Amino acid sequence: MPRWLASHLRSRQVSRVIYGAIIGLALVVALEVHPPEAGAVAATLVGTALAVGLAEAYSEVVALETRGRRHARRSELRHLGADVAAVATGIAFPAVYFVLAAADVLEKATAFDLAKWSGLGVIGLYGFVGARASGTSLPGSLLQAATVALIGGFLIALKALVH
Image (cartoon, rainbow, N blue to C red; front, top):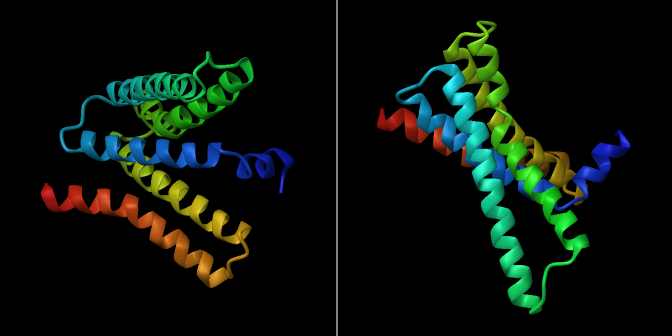
């Protein structure tokens, strides 16, 4: 396993990427009901990533200062920046598919399918890797991956049932 990946998997950013991926997936599923142009979907994902990232940063700084009764330290802000970037990346990642659709490399419907299923894949993959890292057996890890992937599957199924 590459060193950067092993380092990432031991970091707090794992939970942040998963959190972001769930938000991104929910947004993609909601936008698919009455889909705007592909460029607008990409911009919405990136804008949401920025807004959620800023909200995450603001809430964490306030929490640090409230708990510590002092200003946040530079080292705390650096860690916070990495967390915010992880959340934003999880949310914005599917924008790549919509940029490709806006450039007529993909159909918009294909971009929606790729965004949904890759989001679901990311969530499940992190569940699998987390289980394996904790010593869970291969069947148990697959079960955990499937269980956490049900979060995304629930969003996709809900959209299918409602529309």
